[in-house]
Amino acid sequence: MSKDNDMIRALLGPAGPELTCDQCFEELDRFVELELAGGDAERAVPGMGAHLRGCPACREEHESLLALVGDS
Amino acid sequence: MGTSTVLAIDMPTELTSSQWVDALREEGPRRDDAIARLHRLLLRAARFEVGRRRTGLPHLRGESVDDLAAQSADDALVAVLAKLDDFRGESRFTTWAYKFALLEAAVRLRKLSWQGRELPLEPESWDTFSANHTSPHRDAELREWLTALRVAIDEQLTPHQREVLVAITLTGVPIDVLADRLDTTRGALYKTLHDARHKLRRCLAEQGLDIEGVAG
Image 1 (cartoon, rainbow over the protein chains, first blue to last red):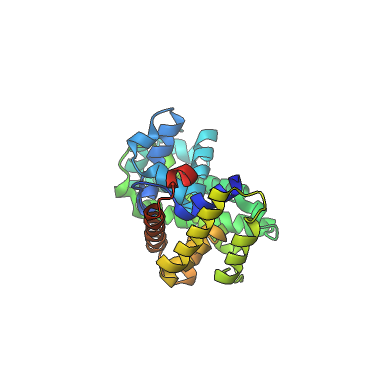
Image 2: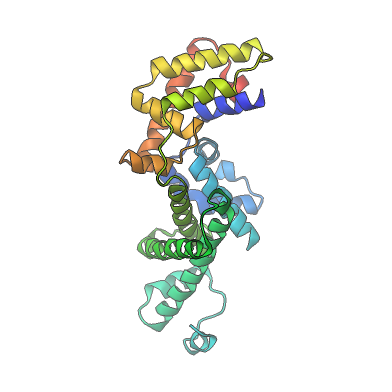
């Protein structure tokens, strides 16, 4: 069930407006710092969370920046 | 570059964001020092990314790993210097710079992992689709969903939209690898993916299927 739902989610992508890959890259540093500071990053950068759910490559880069800056 | 050089040109050990930008905009030894420091930071980020992702590349040897990280840091340095005017100060300069190195390394790793491989397109992908997700215990709603989705993918999408959707979401082809093979850009492909998903959502909604209940 969960695997099927994951597949459907991947195929259909996020609902609602989302950033493009270029916009995501532009906002990534600010978004990550807001997340690490415990701020409402999704509200500050509308459409970012949706894009990260829909784009595997941007999601990887977000995870890496979050981990790198979080470790620093 | 040694500590004595750093002290001789009166640069603090830790730079604020504005000190970074000012030093990189100057001419002379302060800029040279800032560039050397920046390159070390970018190399650290690139190595971090390679370390995280190299499990997917078991054939990558130590020397190749170092080369890949060094090339990524070099290209990231060029990108950071070229885009310095775009830094708005909304994050720390180092966080802003890191993302360029992570991107360069991530793209290189993804391309390397698919080097020389055929991109799995429709026949294999659809086999995977049905084989992995058919179960005698699947509930009726999910079966209806998957059938409707498969029909919508076949009937509503253009061949290009179908190819992009299947490659990125079902077979795990990285978007930048696909962009290279199709001679297009990551942004253009994501727009195609986005439009395909929008068509599918609209089609399924018109059939009265509860999209948010299943995919929300």
